[in-house]
Length: 267
Picture 1 (cartoon, one colour):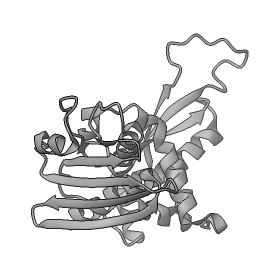
Picture 2 (cartoon, rainbow, N blue to C red):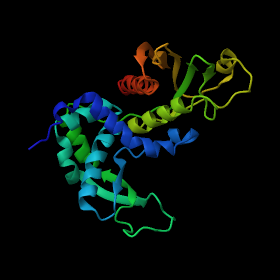
Picture 3 (cartoon, rainbow, N blue to C red):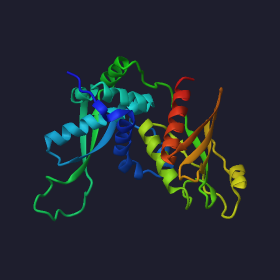
Picture 4 (cartoon, rainbow, N blue to C red):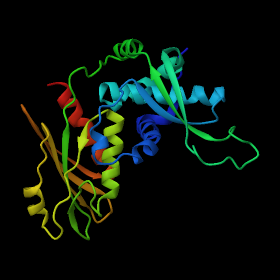
C-alpha cells in the first residue's frame, strides 16, 4: 500500500527535501560545486549507527534526494513522495556508509554513541531508480552535464555587488547556489574575486567564466523585503530570459537553476 502526504502540500515537501541538503552543502566552497556528483547516492543525518528505525527513516529521506539529482528535477522527487514511493526505498539500497559527525571528539555523555548523529550515505541501485523514474513518467538525465557559470548581481538597498567565490557580501546567495547545485547534481561555478573598488559593471566586464553555459542574474530587494530577479540563460542553441517577482532569494535561485537544468537536459 502506498502512503500519501495528505495536506502537507508540494511546497512543504520541497522545503523538507532541501533542508536535508543544507548541512552537507555548507561544506561546499568554490570548485567543490563543479565536482561530478554520485547521482545515485545521497546523505541523510541520522541518530545512532545501529538504530534501525533511524536507518530506515534516513533511507526514505535519501530516496527523493537521489531522484532529484538523477533527473535534475526537484518536482520528480515531490511526486515520488506524494505517491508514496518512498515506502519502497529500502528495497533499492545496495550500500550504506556511516560517518560520525563528531569524529575525533571524545565521547563525554553517558549514552555513548546511541544518540550521536551520523551522516548516512545511502547508495541506491541505478536500475531500480531508473525503473521508478519510468513509473513516475520521468527519465534520468543521461547526457553530459555542462558546467554552469553563475554571475549574480545583488542590490539589497544598501549596496550593489557581484556574488563571487569569496566575496564578503552575498554569503546567503552563495550558500543557496551551493545547496541547489548539490540537490540537482549540477556542476556550478562562481566568478573569481575581482579587484576591490571596481564597479559592478567593471566586475562583470572583467570576469571570465569559461563555462559552456552561463546563467546571469540580477536580484533586487523590494521595500517589503522580498526579491525581484531577472535571469538570462545562454548556451549553444539557448537564450532563455525569465523573471521571478516577490520571492525569497533562495527560492529565486532554486527556481532559476531548476529551470536551467530542465532546458539543458532537453538539448
